[in-house]
Image (cartoon, rainbow, N blue to C red; front, side, top):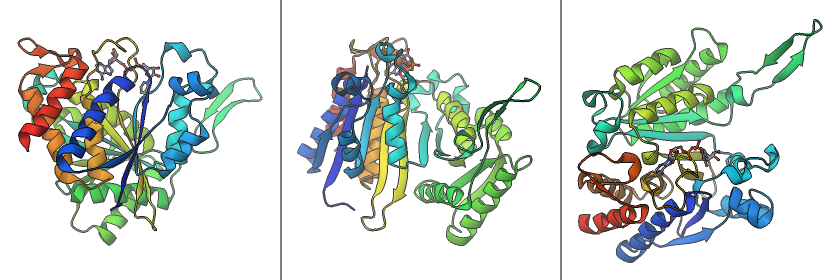
Length: 370
Ligand code: NAD
């Protein structure tokens, strides 16, 4: 446990600053009412950093991110910067953060709040009580494997190549994260691969099983092929607790699982790196799944709950503040139960509120619950 808790806030572009303001409200409340002080740093990322400094992430901000216990990010990007060359685009700031912080495990929970059960495209009885955590390997696999490229063959036709490659260590470190998290949840891990047709999948399956047998005998581990998992996620999603999978399958399955919950404005995420042996600290970045939503930016329409739930993940995983993380999640659920809705999750008979009013309601619920 770090003695001081340092947080770097990078609101970014579009609705990023609006949703981050609601996190600050909760941070202030935790300081005032629970005696939890955070050392807060601020920085620019994405288009905001391009406008101010000519680049999407400065070295100074990168240094701050590496020194912080956790980084909270709003969102980056927008039409203003769409025509910039790829190397200078806002997204490069986020990619640099992920790369230099070596964030190899991406955590995407898919939870259905009782009040929003009707927002899913699936039947309420299929998604009610849903609580899945997908752990996706983020820095290896086919998106990074070599050789890759497009080549012209002697007959003039072309050939595109990507390489799916994983090492024992890459598999074990992400599997370890999944097993540790399962230990704090319902103790089940489903490892997803294509071991029936891919050698890298055979290795994945063997290494995940070996680590479980060596170090996590209490975890109930099952294996599933990725195509079956895609089907099971819509057929009977409640069978899953933690799913661990590679970069490519995780990319697809985490979006599929997210949509079971029905709304982009409700989805948090975390990306974790290795534990530093001397400090015991794990590098971590928390961000909502949604983008900068330029179509609604500056209008007070953004749903701040994905950002607030990302902060709840930060309390849980970076600071082991389990009680406060639970409290924040319960506060969000109670505000939804009370009928408040931002425009994106609006239903008939509910009260439509702005970003700020939603954030204030969550803080009021925190106070009421304690
Ligand atoms: P988006 O997630 O920004 O928006 C998609 C749709 O969902 C929009 O209609 C938007 O209004 C709505 N929406 C998103 N978040 C919402 C919220 N919190 N509350 C209410 N409604 C919300 O995706 P997009 O439109 O494809 O991309 C817009 C910009 O964001 C692009 O520049 C893109 O590159 C960038 N982007 C950034 C990230 C990131 O920073 N991690 C992720 C995705 C997209």
